[in-house]
Amino acid sequence: MSQPSLLVSVRCVDEVAAAIEGGAEIIDVKEPSHGSLGMALPETLAACSVAVPERLLWTFAAGELLDSSRNGDSAACRVAVSLPKLERLPYAVKFGLSQCCDIEWTEVFQDVAASLPVSVRAIPVAYADGQAAGSPTVPAVLEAAVQHGWSTVLVDTFDKADSGSLLDLFPIETIQGWVAQASRHGVEVVLAGRLSVQDVPAVSACEPMAVAVRSAVCVGGRTGRVDTQLVQMVASQCQAGSVNSQQHRIGRNELKGENL
Image 1 (cartoon, rainbow, N blue to C red):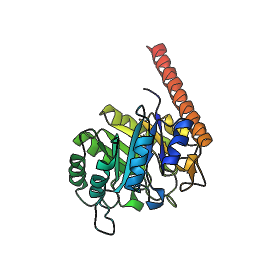
Image 2 (tube, rainbow, N blue to C red):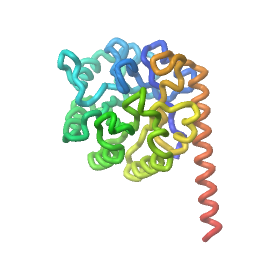
Image 3 (cartoon, one colour):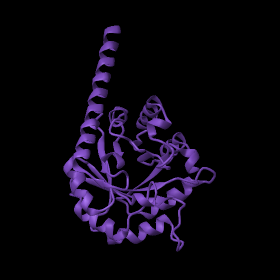
Image 4 (tube, rainbow, N blue to C red):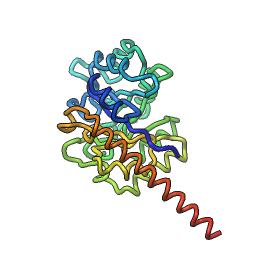
C-alpha cells in the first residue's frame, strides 16, 4: 500500500501556501472556531479553491449533517449556496454525524450526497468520541459505507476540548482493524482527531488513505495559524510511520516464507 497522504486543514487562503510548502498533499478548508467540522464562509472557500494547485486535492468541511444555522439553513443548503461560487470544485465535502445515533441517518446522508455534483464525494465523519457527539459508532459508519458503496470515511473527534485524541480513545490495534476491514471492502479511511506530532507515525502505520491534522501544525493551537516548519515535521513523521509499517510487513512475509 502506498504512503498515506498528509491532509492539512486550513482556515484561510493565507494558510494554503504554508501548508503546501510544508508538504501537505490534501488541503481541507474549515473554520475551527465553529466546531470540529465548522464550515468556512463562501468567500473563503472560493479563495482557497483558486489557491490550491490543480495537482493537489482539496476538500471542505460542511458542518454536521443535521445541523441548521440560525436562519434555518441546513448543511446541505449551505453547501448548495457555496458550490456555484467556486472556480474549482472540491474533491469531497465532509459531513459530521453528531446527534445521528437514534435516527435513520443513512437516508439523510444519501439524499445530501445525491444533491452534490457527480464529481464531488460526500464523506461521512465517524466520531471516535461517539458518546460526546451522540453519533453512530465508528464500526457502524464503516459498515454503512460498505453497504451503500460510499468511497471514504473520515474518523475524527467531536469534542476538541475534553475527549482527548484518537489514540486516547482507542488502542492502535483497534484503529488498525478499522482500516484493514474497510480496505478489504474497498472503503478508504482518513484518520484524524487531535493528533499530535508524536501520534502521527503510529497512525500513519495503520495505512489509512490520509492522516489529517490541524492543531499539530498550528502555532497557537487549533485556532492559531498553520506553520510551514510544523507541517514539514508532521510530513516527515507521516513518512516514517509508513516506512516502519512496510518494513514490518516485509518482515512478517519473510517469516511466513521461512515457515513454509
